[in-house]
Length: 289
Image 1 (cartoon, helix red, strand yellow):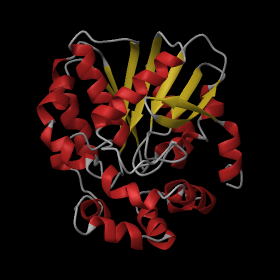
Image 2: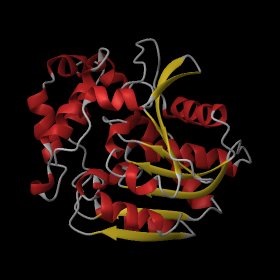
Image 3: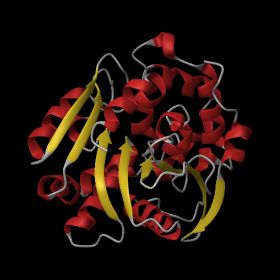
Image 4: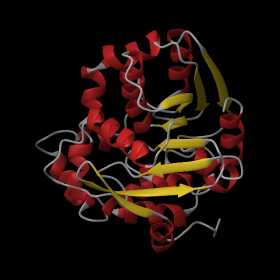
């Protein structure tokens, strides 16, 4: 558990690219012919995937970036951080890297960015071909989500900025600890770095802006859940069954809504399977790549 990269080591491992007015932090590793692109969750960043990169890169090139407002990417205050715009940035990045066909892997917040990309595919806008789609533990079905109280408060335009300003590492660690099923797998070194990533470059100030995605999930339900219902793409679901936020029942409902799908269940694992059970997570993902 001591092999978690430091903040500085992770920063040195990636690169910065200018994409649609944002300074985007990008990890791009592996030399294989096929590419996996990853969309990370909230409120973390690309660092979530450090443990699975050595398991994937022998087989695939892997590209994972920090969404604008997250991690080491720029955190502008004059920006809406809409899920639509996050999809714009992701697609623009992949095009700038010269990618033509990718395997899409998304978790948490990233699954909502992914559903917008799927909606665009359904409308015959697919600048980069999606060879496969894997979604996991994201509250796309927002009516079923058991959001943390901090998520609910942060999106409030009046008191959200106050909570963001008062947020502390202690509160962050307490909330993240709840998301692990097997507490023995908790690595406080990871939490230290994730907290540094979150607060980097005035990260507290953008948290209320980032949290507006929760309301977007409700407002554009028919576009995004409808996209899953209408797509002719096969959707691979990889779901940790002890997630206290994106509960396992979501996976069973999504199975009913998506015409072509498969489900891999990660038993006795919490919300962050790529950190809590990286080997099991990668094995489940690889089954449909």
